[in-house]
Image (cartoon, rainbow, N blue to C red):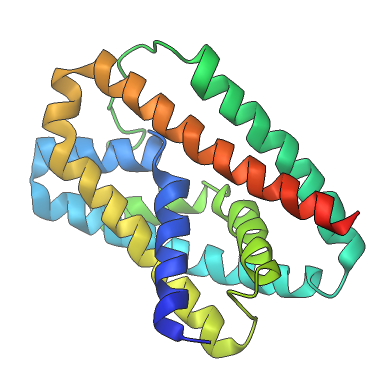
Length: 209
């Protein structure tokens, strides 16, 4: 398996996972705006260190589950329901949201790197998300669970997280100037992505029947 291809798989999957506005990307944008680009990058590096660890743990967990087909079947069905609900929410319900407040939850003067570590550590969503996505990729034959491939995938996931945090920092001035239009476009983008994932998951479930 080409490790470069696996690296970019990890990067793309991670990009998709961190697209929705949340504590990490909004805090990175706020720090960059208020304290300078360098401190925003330092915060993002701290976030990515934890993402490396979380994605590695998720991959190990996925490798275990790959040997237990009954667990994968249950996980696929649960994931399908979750992705459908997310798709419905972003395409039909979240038409208009209030402009997000970007005050970080931590106001201390300690290193932004350690703040990134802490906030990323309390965000456990990447573990189940990456576990499911690695199993899905493995089912397509795009990923196996050898050590070198896991490391390549983990590296891609960390880089994907950093890229999206950087995008938030770089473009946030435009986003905050047009909050409603930008949020609506973001909602449709997220809904479309999760819709595609829902379809892929459904196909996998049907194939296993």
